[in-house]
Every structure is written in C-alpha cells, then in structure tokens.
Image 1 (cartoon, helix red, strand yellow):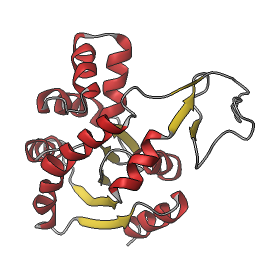
Image 2 (cartoon, one colour):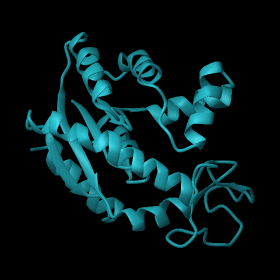
Image 3 (cartoon, rainbow, N blue to C red):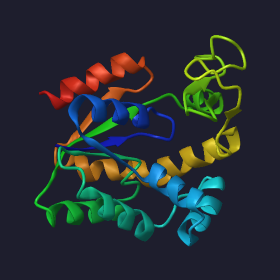
Length: 213
C-alpha cells in the first residue's frame, strides 16, 4: 500500500510515518531525510540543497524525483511519501515512477493544521545531540532540565531552519505550490482529511481507520 502524507512542514508527517513503519512494515520515503543525509555527507547536491532549504525554499523537482526513484525499490510492503510530491510536476513524476513498477497510490492523507499554532510547534522543538530524542520547549521538555530522558546526555540542538521567518516562508511555499496539487488527487477520489492538531495518538487512530477501510 503506497500512500502520501500531505501537510505543511511540522504537521506531523514524519511522526506518523515512523509509526506506520513500526506497525505495518511500510517504508518512509522522506525527501527531507534523504536531503539531510546528502547535506551531512557534503555532496554537491547536499551543499546546493542546504542553501536552498535555509532560505525556506524548495529544491528542484529533478533532484527530489531522482532521490525517490532510487529508494522506492526497497519499500516492498508499501511506501509512505513524506514531503513528496510538493508540486504538480512532482505528482506527475510520481505517477510514472509507480506505474513503471506496477504500483499505484492507495490514499493521499492531508493533515489539516492551524498555521499560527504550527509555527509555535516547530520553533519550540529541539533534540538530543547524542541520541536524537525529540523535545519541545513547552509541550515536551526533558523531565530534568538540560538532561536527555533517553540517554542522559546534556547536549541539545535545534535545526537551523526552525525559526519563525523560515517556517513562514516554507508555509507560504506550501500554500502556493503544494496545496494546489490536491485537485489532482481529489479527481481520483484519493484524498482523505485528518485533523493534524490532535494528539499523536488521535491522528494515528484516524490514519489507521483510513488505511483499514
């Protein structure tokens, strides 16, 4: 079962994709993760992507589609497209990528969110630099200030693009370029809406109901 999780940055797509991997054996194909890996490795594509992402802009369709094509074969129990497609050309490219492999989309699940609340959610998040455990300044701080609940580490980090200006730029990009692809999928009856501002558990239950219907 191949699905798309759609919503603006910070809507919870990654969290839900990780859960579906654990519960259903599906594979998350996150362009963000793949791009960050390229950035960490310092490849030419990574250096180019870093500059683009820090401006709150989107990388080219050619780069993103190539990354997806390379990783799709390993998603034998279903792919979860997280952060892709973002534009109609990418949506059309995905149709071809899937068709070439005898696959098709089952659902496009849109996580609906409140933009102002989402800015607060994103700008307050941080993680343990040692084990990667996720936290939030108000919603989920460490039990002991300055100490990771999971590994006891004391070093924390924030993503450089988790600031209000960049987040709002990314949301503007989403509204301008990604939201208009919904009619492309609505015409095929694939779009389902979920309240992305609910708890992680509530969002998960809503997604499971769609996948099991």
